[in-house]
Image 1 (cartoon, helix red, strand yellow):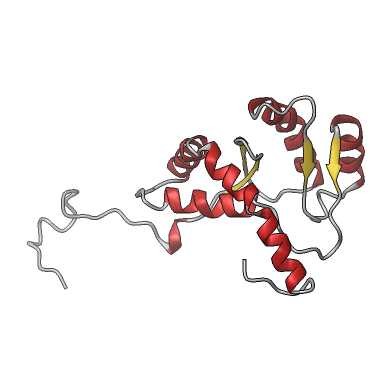
Image 2 (cartoon, rainbow, N blue to C red; image 1 turned 90 degrees about the vertical axis):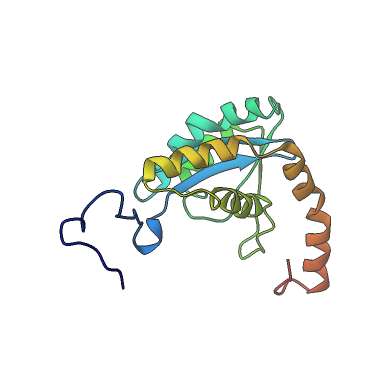
Length: 174
């Protein structure tokens, strides 16, 4: 409970800005290598195979160049139906040196999942009041992710693989 004078109830210095229901969210698509992160792409609305293909066209080679991987990079994607759509597979066939195939129902060993958690922890230290501010912080914090973070995640892959083998393909503790 808070007591105020009747004339001061809506004064700006008294009001505290707040974000309702967790403040919303922003869907992003990004990539990484063992050396660095690539581009971060903001997605508005629902992503379908056509949007995914446009994102690949706009960002894949540019990201590979940014990370110093041209011309011999590999594209790893999970089994999302958008990734496996015929038009996307056809485009990658002609524009990617190599696409790493992922088995159906395979465990997600992609270190990019850990980068999302790392990015989330970095932006939580800021008070963000709008979607534009969220985008700015995401972009600035994404660009600040150091190469050693990526390298350490890739170095841990053998531990993840051993855990999957130990669990005989079942749930793992990573």
